[in-house]
Length: 611
Image 1 (cartoon, one colour):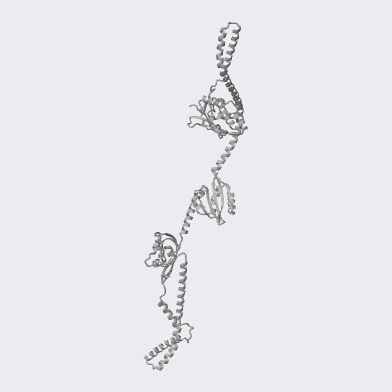
Image 2: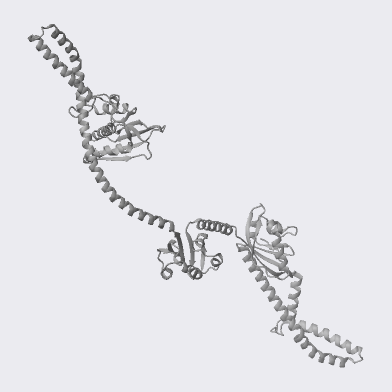
C-alpha cells in the first residue's frame, strides 16, 4: 500500500545538508584540505574587502593590509564561533529531527498497516490517509478513499451523519470528543456497526483528525442477544406468581419483581432505594416473629446453603420462603429469595383437618347405624330366603298343577257318568262316588296350588333403585368376599323412584350377582352401576363382571327356561328366565352383552314414576 503522507522536498534537504557540510564539525582537523581551502577563500575575500574599504578612506596600502590582517585575526574566529558553529549545531539537530520523524513515520505506517482496526486521517473534510484494512472492510481502494473527489460521508449511515459532522466540528474547535458508535456503510451497501476513537493532530503543517474505527457488529449482536435474553428473563420473573428478591453480597438489591412488592406491601420509592436493609426494616412489623426472621436471614447470608421456612403474619397471611445462593464463577455473589403466598392453601388444609375430624365422627356414628341396619338386613334376608322357598314351592306347585289338571279334568266327568249309571246304594255306586269325591278333592288341591303359585307383580311401591341394589348385596356380601370377589359400586345421584315389587327386584339383583359370581370361580370384580338411559326417560342397572364370558352361540338362549351352561346338578336354568319375567311384568327390559374370555354385562331398564 502507498501512503499519501507528505515528504520533504529534495532541494530543501540538500540546502540544509550543504550548510552543515560548510560549517563542519568542531573536531575537524586544520590539516583537512577542504577546511583550509575554505578558510583561505573566506580570508582572501575578507582581506580584499577590508583593503578596499581602507583605500576608499585614504589609507595607504601597507597600512591597509596590516589593518586587514589584524581584523581577520579578530573577525574570522568570531565568525566561526558566533555564526558558523551554531549554524552547524542547528543543522545537525534538524537532520536528527528528520531522522526521528522518518523513523516515527515508518513505525506509524507499520503499526497502522498491521492493525486489525481501520485507521485514517481526515484533513479539511477529506481522507488523506487510510490503512489497508479500510480497503478490505469498506470495499473502496485506498487510492479512491484518499482521492480529492471522494465524499467520506458516503461511508456513514444516514442517521449518523449529523453526529459525525458535529464531532468533526468540535475537534476543529479544539474540543475532546469521546469514543462513540455509528453505522458504517460499505460499497456494497452492507451495514457495519462501528466504534470510532478520534484525536486532533498536526499533519502537513495543519490540523487533522486521526480516527481509529473498530468493527463492533459481533459485539452489538451479542449485546442485543444479551438484552433480549435479559428482557425474557425479566418477563419470566415478572410473570411469576411468587415474589422474587435478588440481593448481592454487599446488601444491594439487584432485582425485584412486582409481585414481591405487592406481597410485602412495599412502596415503589422504597424499592427504588436498592437497600436490602431498608426493605427488611419495613417488613419486620408485619411478622409474628420478626426476631426469628432476622436470625434466619443472617445465618443464610453467612452461608452458601439453601433455605426454606414458613412465615406467619400478624394479619393471618402465611408465606413460604425459599432461599438459594447466587453463584457466579463458582463463588457466592449474593442470594435469591422467593416468597409464595400460601394463605388460601393453609385455610383449605385447616378446613380439611376439621372435615376429617367430622368425618371420623360420622364414621363412628355410621358404624353404629350399619350395625343396626345389619341386624335389620339379617331379618330381611331371612324373609327373602323364606320368600324364595315359597317361590320354589310355587313353581313346583305350578308344574304339578299343569301336569295333573288335564287328566283330572277328563277323568272326573267319566267317573260321574258311570256313577250315575250304577244303582244307588250298590257297591259300584258307592265305589264310584268315593272315586268322584277323591277326584274333586284333588281338583281342590290343584286349585289351591294354582292360587299359591299365581305369578303376579305383588305389592307395587315406590322404590329407590340404589337402595334396592345396596340392600340386595348385603345378602351375598359375605359369600362374595369369601370367594375373592370385589364389588365396585357406582350409584348415580338424583335418580327418580320406580314403582315395583321389592322382592321381585331384589330377586333380579341377586340373580344377576349370582350369575356374575358363577362366571368367576377364581375370583374377580363385579361392577354395579346405576343411572339414566340415553334418552333420560328411564333408569337402568348395569351388572358387569370380568369372568369367562358367554359364547355367541349361547347368547340367544340365555333367557330360556331350564337352559343352563352349568353341569348337571348345579342349577335348573330358571334364574335368568325368572328375572326376565319379573322385569317384563314391570314393563322393563333386560339385555346382555358378552365377549368370551373378557366378561359379561347385563343391563336392566325400568320406567320411572310419572309426576
